[in-house]
Amino acid sequence: MTILYQELLIKKSKKILGLMSGTSMDGLDMCLAEVSLDNDYSFEYQIINTKYEKFDIETINFIKRGILDNSCLNELNIFLGKKYSDIVKQYFFINEMDLISMHGQTVTHINGVKSIQVGDPSFLNDIFNVPIIYNFRYSDIEKGGNGAPLMPFLDWLLFRDYSTDVVTLNIGGISNISWIKRSGSINDVIGFDTGPGMSLIDEFVFLKWGLRYDDKGLLAINGKIDYEFLDELLNYDYIKKEPPKSTGREEFGINMIHSLISKFPNIDKFDFLRTLVRFTADSIIDNLQHIKNIYSNDVSLIISGGGINNKLLVEDIKKKSTFSNIIKSDDIGINSDIKEAFLMCVLGMGRFINLETNIPSVTGASKSVLCGDIYE
Image 1 (cartoon, rainbow, N blue to C red):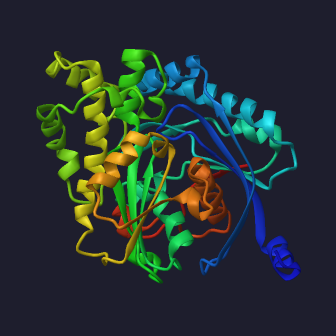
Image 2 (cartoon, rainbow, N blue to C red):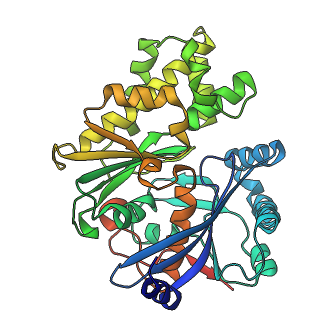
């Protein structure tokens, strides 16, 4: 880094701690980054530190209860606010950051209606005495949007000057894709949730094996695809729905798993899991048809998110995909495991400088808006 750039960064940047738990429910991703972002969308960054803390089973069970029963959300909001602050103070020092940008735990997301993230920001503010930026989806929904996905904004900043058109795929609890036109404007971006990421797979593995996830897909590889079951899954309304669209665990979570088990009670659990993996891959690739007529043949698929650690899922995606160039974001210097937490750093900076960071062509909102509230 040149001295000139260092001076520019110091003048125009902020050190921001991004926190993401989102739809995955497994733990808290933390990313401390120095971010420079202007009102003309000029963008520079440096990742300083990253951490991850796995949630204990008590926390996971409380989150699951909150998803199924919204009457306990006030209690869960306080519980997670304290939990986040307790985790962060283990890894980061007071005065180490200028801002904290916190997504919170998604407990409800109804397409175009509401999206609720819990985690009281006051506890972080009490400890670190910096502004806490949170509640990123509300203002977009208020303008008729879905409030999701948020990732296309970061993808556009990262890949607008890439050598080809780019389709990004982020596989978290829910999967989302973005299409980034080479040298295109922010208004050219298209993005939406495709359906399940790891949500159905993780819920079934926990229910049947008591494990949080299927490490590398080593459980599912023992099963065979049940094609009658697969056809049932691929006919699910959301998969065929035209974008803009977004979804959550209300549609692709434990309730769906229980319903499917009741409908297909005789499927071996390994076959059931193997079919869920294939469904997740097919739902992603099938959804790419919505933008197939837009992007050129010269296009790269860049994948990220916790789901890329499931090797069987990635293999299924590659087998069905027609992309000639499929790469993991890690291979081009963007750590897949912390990308969502880094997104929070960038969105937090956007809100701090009063930059509109939703993308109406993605969310369906009537206009661009400031995303996030500031607690200080």
